[in-house]
Image (cartoon, rainbow, N blue to C red; front, top):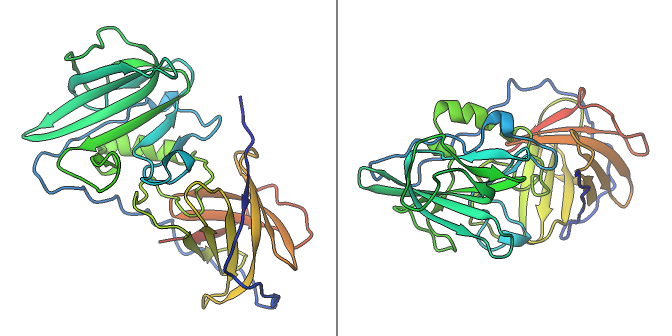
Length: 322
C-alpha cells in the first residue's frame, strides 16, 4: 500500500525580508555531481570486515521509501540516531548474510512475532556482528551456532528489514555504542548496488540529514545549507529543523553572499513519487515545486509565485551541500 505523508516544515528565528529584486539568473551546472567521500573506517585496529548487501538488488523496492540511512534522527531514534539501514524488500524476498560468520543469536520479537538473526564475524582478533531484523520466517538451517556463508539466505522479509553492523573495537557514549555505518565496509560490487538502491530513498528528514551515513551525534535545532551549482533559481537555501522527533522545517532563501532575502514555511508531500512536491510559503509569496535529493545533491524545480507546479525536473536547478 502506498502511504501519503505530508510534513509541514516550520522555521523560527529568521526575519522575513520582502526584497525579492535579487536576480535569479541561470548558471551553468558546475560539472558532474561530486560524490561525498565514503566515511572513514571507525577504527585503526587490523582486521577489516568486507561485507556485501543483505538484500539482492533485484529484491529492492521503493514502493514507500526505498531505504532509510544510518544516523538520521526521527521520533523512534531521537536521541541516538538510526543505528543501521532499513531496506524495503519486495514481499517474500530473502535477507542474506552480509559476510561469512557464525550465528550468535536468533530470537523473536514478542510484539511483532518476527525473527531477528545476529551473526558474529571474526577477522583476526577483531570482532563484528551483523543484525537482520523483522524476518517473517527463517530459512532452513538458521539456528544459533550454525555457520553461514556470505550471501546465504537467512529468512524472508515481509516488507522492511533493519540491517546493523556492530564493530566491537568502536564505542560511543550513546545507546547501541558499537553500531557503525556499513558504508565504508562495502565491497566495490556491494557499493555499486547500494548506490542504485540509495538513489531511490525518500524520507522526511532529507533536507537536513541527506547522506547515507549521517552523524549519530547531532544537536538540535539543526540546519543545512544548499548552494546552487547550476540552473535557474535562487542562489541558495537553508533548511532547519527544531528537534529530532519533529518533522517541522523552515526555509531561508539566500543570495550568493549568504544574505537572507526570504523566509517562510514549507510543506512537502512524499506521496507524489518519483518527484515529491514542495510548497514554499512566505508572508509575501507562495511557490510550488518538485524536488529530488540524493546524498549531497538537491534538484529543485520551483515555479514563480502564483504559477502552476512544474511537472518535470528536466529544468531543475541543482543545489549541493557539504
